[in-house]
Image (cartoon, rainbow, N blue to C red):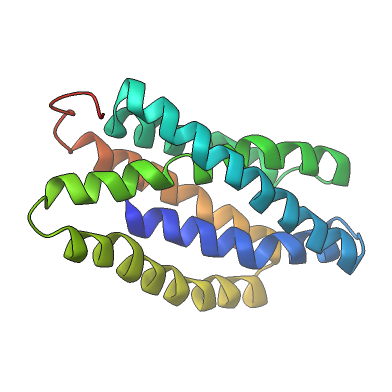
Length: 175
């Protein structure tokens, strides 16, 4: 799941500005602004996601976040209006960033005697895989289109949901 989130993060980070410029035919500034909106909302989404996961549990939060991303990414790549694409960044940001804290905390809960190792896996290794996925998505964009590269991300939340469902239910609600 950490790898899935990282692939989504790097894919959106890489292709949202390009989508604005080449598909929506907006300016470079508008592309950068779209990315700024995604990340600014990400700050708030991370805080809200952590609070919600404290009430409903990490596993449920991760499943919910990935489940939110699945239809949003599919619809987002079909939007050809900059205003509506910008509006869609709100729930996309929530889906992407609200699960970050629960993923990190889950990793540390699964390896309570090795918190440093768990952090290395949930942060370091995931970033590596996300970074490796970016050139693959770039190749897809070059061969097919930026829109297809973004559409290829739709499968990632589905895989992550499947993986999250294999996790044991939270033994107790997080503190």
